[in-house]
Image (cartoon, rainbow, N blue to C red; front, side, top):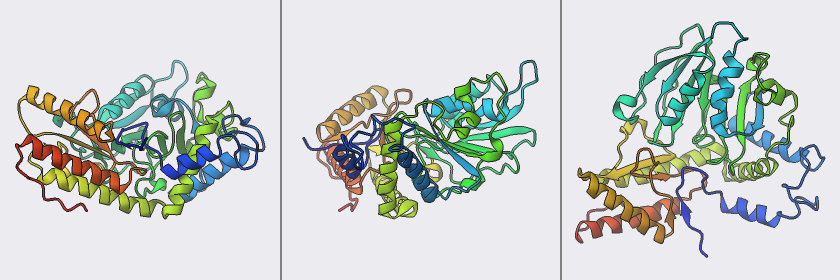
Length: 380
């Protein structure tokens, strides 16, 4: 069966060369006589795998020496709890510390809600007033804040930060799950970065945390051991059995990215893919992007029909998604909370996949508009 183009927001498609290498090594990784999923995490066979994966990530992202890289479990959502516990948790009976959040989407909202269980949070800015279709101008950090949290790329609505807030000495914390390695990022601007793997890094089940060393070791004594960054850092991510196979696949993805030319090369390709698709939407008479142009994501592009009648929109969306899937263009439905459609153009999505989607949308638009050709995008 021919492989489809998977536009899912996550788990997303992986590079074909990575899958082929993993398949070839399924029963014997590098002469070990075993699969990566069979290896003891403390064995001499797994040690070079996790060390190489970390070294590649450090090189590709330019991670400074005073930052630790942790491979954890629980998804990015568990970090909604680990961040406040480790950066601003207090002993029983002590007053809560303060932290700032900027609410730019549903995941940012969830992070703030979870953080409020442990710290006195302040939502410093929000774009909820316009359905999260823009990034609000954030105020500077409060000097009393233990940290300042943002979500760098918002997968559900399709927005991205293009200019970071000024936080001074207050650690800037960012969820970069759907943006990691998609374009250059100055790690030293942040205190903590975290990302679920299932978008640009590898399969679901692994979470990467990049944390400045001076922020480790601040969790209150009552914090569960597995939720303490210092425990994981002391044991080099091996306090308990890590997601070994996921870490192995991440290593292969990072090797693939290095061979392509690293983050600058993939960033240029990502800009090309996004420009092509947004260009089509701008001239389309059937579809439009609901996101303000200055804040449009490179990774998650949302689009909706232009018609006003809700029933008519819903019928068109249903036909579009079904017909696209029949052509091998899958997982284009928008998030269940917002509807519409969404094309996620993560690193592994080739340019040809974007061109194939545009060709389908042009044909779909022509049919829907009664045979009148309305698209003139040059995407060949």
